[in-house]
Image (cartoon, rainbow, N blue to C red):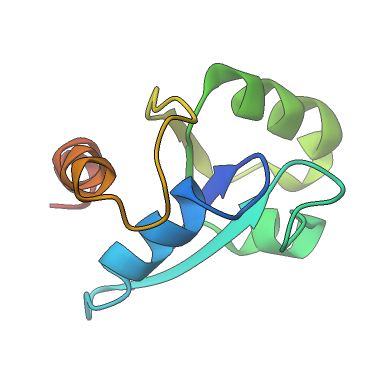
Length: 107
């Protein structure tokens, strides 16, 4: 079973949507976090070490991840989904984009 971590800035819209969308799969464990210090669930070294694959929503998230969590980022594969902060939580368009972009890495 793979551990999948979804990361955005605040952990309020994009990454929690991704976590919820993929939480029903039985072949993976999912979690989400935010890169900002005031995120609903701020990203930790433990989460980064736990993850096999980390999906970031934007290139800025990857940059923050690589700078702040370099020591913890040894094993995880980091994939940028290029999804801008233009969507509400569980927005049907966001869900469709997430399914299309994430599924190719999980199947």
